[in-house]
Length: 152
Length: 329
Image (tube, rainbow over all chains, first blue to last red; front, top):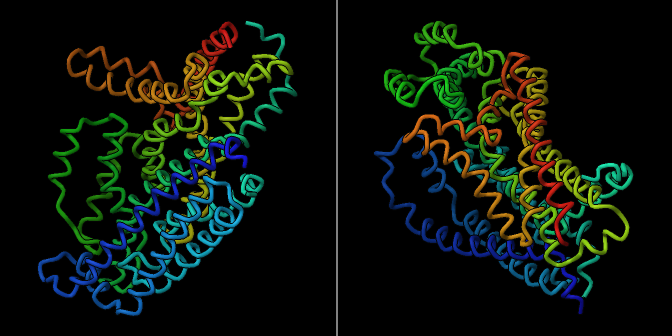
């Protein structure tokens, strides 16, 4: 309808969504491969920090792995859908799905911080704050700056 | 120059609108993302090893000893800061680093030695790593070096995009060129300052709450000083982007030129300096040569750097304004 009037910021947001979605999906493959072989990696010659990290992975357990995998998959798919929604300026596909992605990601960051061992980046650290930048920005921008642009 | 037509109300309106519009237009959004990720990643890279050291110390000694951690930070940070401030050459720094014995965080035998070493620092290094929170100083030095590369993502499209799509013609029915030029410059500077405030506040809050290595008032005071240094430093670089943006019609070309000019001056000075010593003075074509002085302990130095920032800004803005005032839109 009014695709010609799409602000540059919304296009930028869509492009960032596609990039992060692609990274997420590639990361999932890596995560699955890593988890499949993590038990077979010898830790004897590793440094203390690496050893702690590897042991934390080995002790993570299947349910936690499935939880992380599912959450990452859902986030990546939501990012992709929301990106398409931004480009088409759709209310549901853009604004609603974008908001759902942001909320899911914020919750998953908090839950990961609680569930993960400190060696795996768990707890309150600056890396987790970096991970929150994009979902928080998405939440703010979709409900203020681009609120009136996602109406189709 | 037709500065008599400057209308403060128009400049204020344009700057406030521009600082909000910049996110909508995309450049502000991209800058916001890159600046936040860059700033916090720098902090993460600097703080993470210290946190690991604290965890290791707690494991080995059963308790944390912030004083010992601070000493270790000073030992490691001292050669790096001296190299960054160009007090020592790279060769000197690597020689000193090689002569340092690796030590555990609970190895108290070396602390007296490191205490003696620190008393021999030059005043600038001593100020940054002994008198002020060293972690924050290192982060500020890296941000002062890195943020000029990032700022062009925000400031490249102040004028050129509207020249390309002839949108400025409609705006010129209601206001003068000088109001548009200076209004957009101020709006960009306001946005940049707000983003820097966010980065510095997040890092300081994290350092204060999580590591608890430094007293909160010390952290807060140094954070304000570092924020002011970064905010002031961005202004001449934004002015350079204003000049470039007012001179070309294409936003993409404006971005490329801004990147080439900002990085090129630094690169030419470094590479040119190898072949012909005086080429290193090319650094002073932009604030590269003196920008670290914004964190200098001597008032004359930091005040001089602040004045130099405003002088460079005035120079580039004047050139940009002359070009914008006389060009065909």
